[in-house]
Length: 102
Image 1: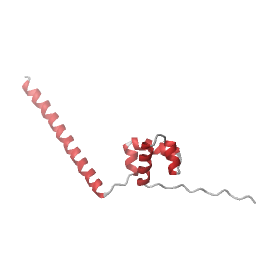
Image 2: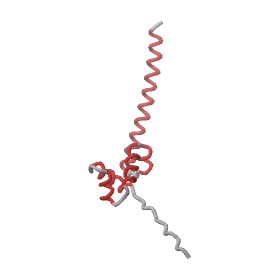
Image 3: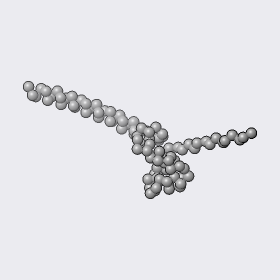
Image 4: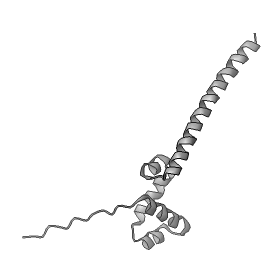
């Protein structure tokens, strides 16, 4: 009877390893050399680099420490508040420009 092929388990990489790998790839002149140094596939590093350029994909796998997460929440709340203030000012300008030009 023939032996069945062994299943190869995929390695899981945490966010810290990915960040270090991307830093090494950026510092290195070659992504392939960085991949050899990390004993991983160059295709995987290229994929991570592409994901790092898109904020949604990067945020999906990122684990933030509590201080950074709290700061991010504060900054997002500030951005929402400033967007609301800007909308109010735009409406006020539209109203005042109509009343001044009869």
